[in-house]
Length: 69
Picture 1 (cartoon, helix red, strand yellow):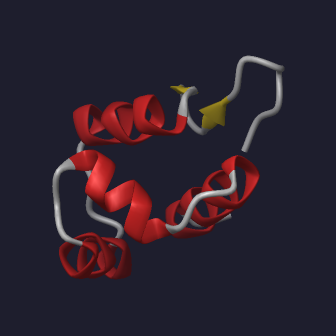
Picture 2: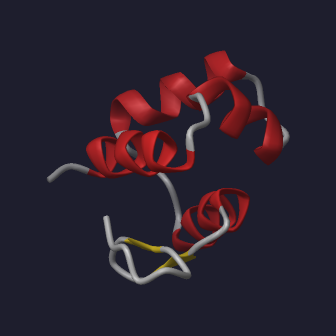
């Protein structure tokens, strides 16, 4: 599974759009989409994405209820 697929699934799981996630991260949806296309995120950025989704990031997203993506 690609990083983009994981982010897409995590957004779907939380019921938010990528645009909403981008705004929560303080970037525009267009910028976020461009970064998703190349899947270029640092570990720190992945941790911020996870925090915005209300989960942890450890080689994937881990939600408080034990769901892993």
